[in-house]
Image 1 (spheres, helix red, strand yellow):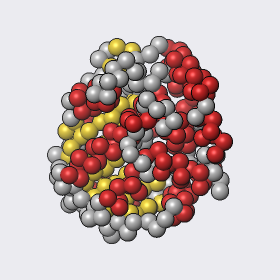
Image 2 (cartoon, rainbow, N blue to C red):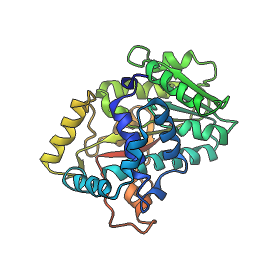
Image 3 (spheres, rainbow, N blue to C red):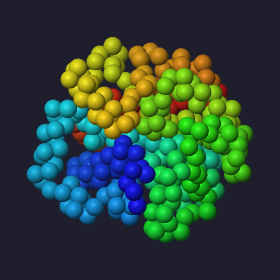
Image 4 (tube, rainbow, N blue to C red):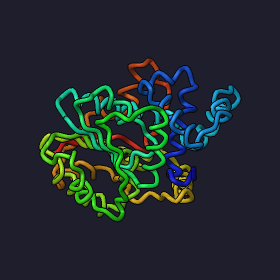
Length: 302
């Protein structure tokens, strides 16, 4: 199976999660079953090898990763695990409130829908991703057991098929139903105009009270640069070389009004959306850094 059927970023995220799962102090912060299921999926596709897992567990390798992070992006590894925890927790909370369908756009190798579909048989779970990536993922998941009947893996190239048109072709999707829509690590790779088009389509395709969960990307927090110019160049260059350059950078004070113009109300309560405050402080790990570049967003459809 060709490894280029998954984006380089998706592969990196999966490998980072596997490495994080082998750090006893931080592994409990990962959603239950998230790392294990992603490892199984990636081993099946060949994107992860048994020798890599042995390497991730080696003490010298953990020290090496910590050293690299210290000089580049401190807390980057942990930020991926906490991002997964955030999406898991928020999705479960939304389902407890009565949302009855979950749509994940550009899921990559993430297993959220696969894990939750069996727990919530009354909820419809849909993944939209590039046909090549989705075919690879379907084969891997089917190798792990029968797919839940309420899980729908849809191959769709959103660069060619608009979101609204794609959803209109899915008989299981209800436009009037309160929904959860997840776009993790997706929107920062789109031009701002395309993000606007995505939000407008989403507003038309979901019922009142639907919830959007996504991650944005920024260089500053409250006017404070997150890192120096060298780290910024490193981040931009690494993504550009991976063929996935950053196109939408969120500016200070921009996001709330931007979402409101498209019919979504942002909840920026620090206790809810700041990963350090939500997870590390209660876990007794306030001294542990977490990258602030990519940050989670909660917005409800009005």
